[in-house]
Each structure stands twice: as structure tokens, then as C-alpha cells.
Image (cartoon, rainbow, N blue to C red; front, side, top):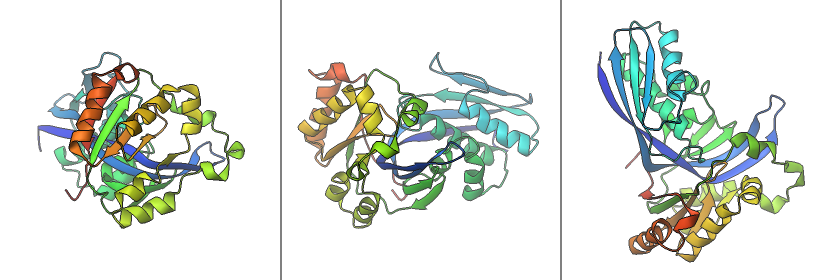
Length: 296
């Protein structure tokens, strides 16, 4: 048994996000292109003799009990396998919170993977993904990572070839957005056909390793709700485009915006402008990273 384990929980962005319909069970049927990025939370798992789960975080406002997804992930495996002892989870957050980057799901995924190794449970990646969906729709993807087409409620995953590497500028305004609010105000019957992103076209561009074609097909149907409520998101998108991004898009239900850059100097200048320049008032958290590809 491994007594102590250090893990990285990588965040994601949506290169494309479409909602097809609302199901009778209340969930929404989606088609999304998911992409892991290089921003990650740090998680330390420490085995403890007492049969309990304890959680410690670096952010005072995050729950350190069963309301945290890392607790739920540990509880799920430890109950199923009736393990002796418990685990202390030390979570250091760097992925923006409530930002459309699946930070909580990524943390839960890392705990599932880590405990599987720590306790020698012998579960395959697919078996972990089957359990992960019980915690959240994004958890199976966060276990898989890389580039993927996500369908169903987000749990039907098709791996795609890695997207060509580039510089990814990420900016989150000083607001948090409720996913429940966004989906609750999404009225699919009022949307025009042209407002739906070309997911099939993006898949084709990814397979052809056409970064311009990918950026040219950016689309997120949830922007129709979130940008109306928070215009600063559009301002960040416009600023990134003006600063040289191939394209810019809101990730998930928002409010985080990302832009893709092929030139390092241009990306650095855009980062400096949003982080320290005249546009710094529109973004509270700014990061410059790249894609995390499983094959890298």
C-alpha cells in the first residue's frame, strides 16, 4: 500500500458546446468538444489509520466535508470496497472556482485515480469512469483527459486526436456563474439554427490538425444566456481577439474565457494587457498555459 500520494488535477475548456434537448429526467443532452489544459490543482492523499475522510483546502470558502467532491469520491470507493482506515485529502486550488473549467470534477477524478492506486483496488480506467459519473457528469472525462467528443449528459466519450499545441490565454472576470441558472434560462425553442455550433465540423478540423479551422468553428450555445447576464464576458472575448487570438470563447457555463494564440510573443503581450494593463479591470484571474494532451 502507498501511504502518501501527490496528484495533479487538470482543468478543461470546451472548444465547442451544444445543447440538443432537455430530457425528461431534467438533464440536458449535449454535444461538446472537451480539451484538457495545463492549469491544475494539487492534491495530496495521506493514508490514515482512523476510518474517516478528512479534507483540507487552501481556500476558506470551500467545504471540507461531504459537500466537497473530493470527499464524495473517496467515500464512494471506500464504502464500496469496505476499506480499513481512511484518508486525509490536502487540496490546493489553482483552477478558477465556479468558472466552467470543471475544477471540482477534476479534483474528484484525481482522488478516484489516486485512491485506486493507493489502496491497490485494481480498477481499470473504464471502471473508474463508470463510478465517476455518479459524482458528476464531467468526472469521467476528467479521468480520461485529452481531447474528446462528449455526448449524452457528458458521460458518452469518444477520444479524438490531440489538438495542435498552441498558447492558451485564460481569463476569469470577478464573478461566479451558477450552472443551474444558465441551463434554467436556456430556451432552446427560441434559438435560431445558426446559433448552434458546428460540432461535426470541429471534429473534422481536429482530425485534420487544422488549428485555424478549430478556432473558426468556436461556439458555445450557453453564451446566449451567460453573456446576456454578464456582458463583461463578451468584453474579454473581444479584447482577446483584438490582441491577436485566433479565436476566443467562453468555457462551459462560464464565466471563464479562453483565447488561442500561435505566437508566443503575441500571447505574452495579451497576457500582460489583461493581467496588468488597461484591461486588467475586466479580469480577476489570468493565466497563460497550453493544452495538456495525453500523448505529450
